[in-house]
Amino acid sequence: MKIEISFEYEMKNSYVLRDLKNGDWEIAVAKGASTVQKQFEILCLYEFLELHSERRVPDPEKTLAFVRRWGPLNNERIDRVPFTEIEIVLRSMLKWSEELSPKNLKQVQSLFRTGIASKYFENNLQISLASNRKSVRPVLRPVNLQTAILLAGLIRGRQDYVRCHLHELLGEPRDQNCPIGCWARKKGRPGRSKRVWGEDKCRAYFNRNKVERGWE
Image 1 (tube, rainbow, N blue to C red):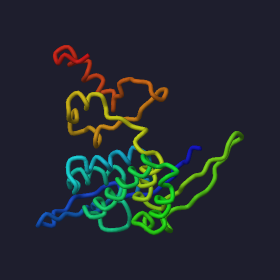
Image 2 (image 1 turned 135 degrees about the vertical axis):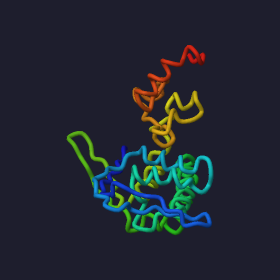
Image 3 (image 1 turned 90 degrees about the vertical axis):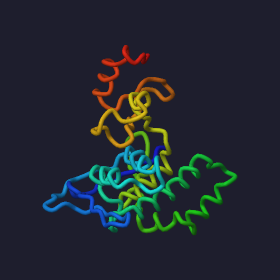
């Protein structure tokens, strides 16, 4: 059964990074920023994980790029602390979802009821039903971005996106305009092997340079 995550929200369209010295920083709404409508996508999960791919504490500039794209995690101050804490919880949830079996189901249920995960879902999630002529499916409606990210990690895992093929070849982004992590949505039939490009520019770059670089 497919479970849908539905989260539409408002966010400011401009943020700035403030250096608080001594290694601390925060991200604040820029002066004169207006409000825009945003809709959660599974891609947000991958870009969030990318913040912690190189280091445990997220890089300030990468975090700023994430917030500008997706908005703040919640209503609290935007700094490294909530990002690091949510990442730790998310990694645990990914592990649970990958190892889920009848043998440890009770343990997982216990962790949700009394463990660290419980505070992130209690009073932060509504459940409704959506239907068509053929089926009925549950719809999970989180109240903030951090809950949406955790739900995506728990329910969808790592199955929807792969890195852009050009990023894999270069070992780095094509340029500074590439999205965080260069993740791209897989298309086509499940299990079908094919190159995935983050943007048309990535495919064009590959075609221009494949002979010189020996890419196949």
